[in-house]
Image (cartoon, rainbow, N blue to C red; front, side):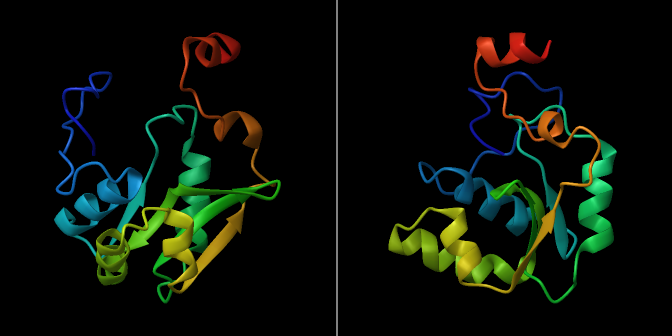
Length: 140
């Protein structure tokens, strides 16, 4: 999800955010609202080195009572990498209406779980953000 005019590096359809200018929480809201299933897997576009191992870790450890399951590694949380339930929609709407766009604040207000990715092969590499040409060259 995002601005289709700005996200041109993918062959997949980009869903425009229903609520603009509120960052990742707006994309999360749009995707969950449009999802056909109860849960969605959210993968950030700036983490292209994620493998099936990360996705399997999420799926195999997700608890259906959790509104969200996210990854952590070395005391860092990755709130845009996870499984989100449609149950979280009312809380997302409240956060957006109040102007609180931080996903970590959203997570603090709902039942969620954090999965430690320390056991993953190459966890540092898989969870690396690539946002600049320098970042890209460093992993190339």
